[in-house]
Image 1 (cartoon, rainbow, N blue to C red):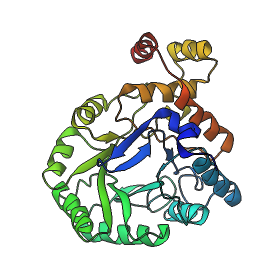
Image 2: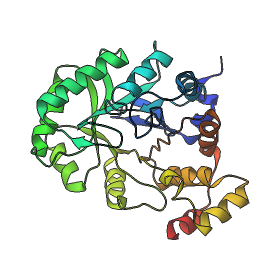
Image 3: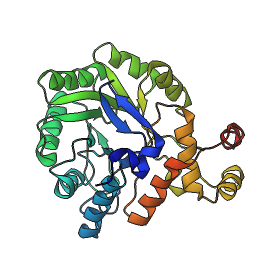
Amino acid sequence: MTPTHALPAAAAGSFRLGGDLPVNRLGYGAMRLTGPGIWGPPADHSGAIAVLKRVVALGVTLIDTADSYGPHVNESLIAEALHPYPADLVIATKGGYTRSGPNQWMPNGRPANLRAACDGSLTRLRRDRIDLYQLHTPDPTVPYEESVGAVAELQREGKIRHIGLSNVSIDQITRARQLVTVVSVQNRYSPQDRKSDDVLAYCAREGIAFLPWGPIGFGKGLQSAAIARVATSHGATPIQIGLAWLLARAPVVLPIPGTASIAHEEENVSSAAITLSADEIAAIAAG
């Protein structure tokens, strides 16, 4: 068996979530392993299983999912493909949305819903405790402290090891930290979608993991001339350069690119070995 530290994803280095849960910094977002509109099962069930197995074989030790992906489909696929889980694999899931159809997302941060969501995730993932449970989004109809407090209660009951937040501002992070220890923040972020620059800077100062979702801009955020030039000089693809740039942004950045293709996953993981110069990093940042 190949040692974990020798696998391709390990080239990105590691980070300790909460100080005690090591993961390789280049993770995998499993959302795309569902039907159109993130609804229903994937068109190719066996292909989705094969992708998940390949993800782990490449040394990825952080997989991100949510109860709302499918809904429920994504978590069940992960368990089918990977349970019993490798000892070093961290599965992060989320709760806080309800779904009524393809591409339909309704925030639901009511404590009763979050409890039901967490319990469902535990069952589908076949786990006694979720390593990283993330509040998926603030619900404008529920005081944020109520939603965070519900997750804190689940942690006290032993159902959650660490707590993360998603789609949040610095104000919401600081409010949550009055109630719980926040070990991760997951916001939309890519080389050309940098509205969360301030949140990333805050996480870097505080030692909080920052998980950029949509890290390659859904294929549209990597079309700058600077990325094209850097890709050519490295004999790499724009996707690989975009991910390498994210890894270079700060040691707390843990990109979670998603794909339903083994070939694309291998392309993504290859970015872990790319080292960009300071000039290249600056050029990409300047657009």
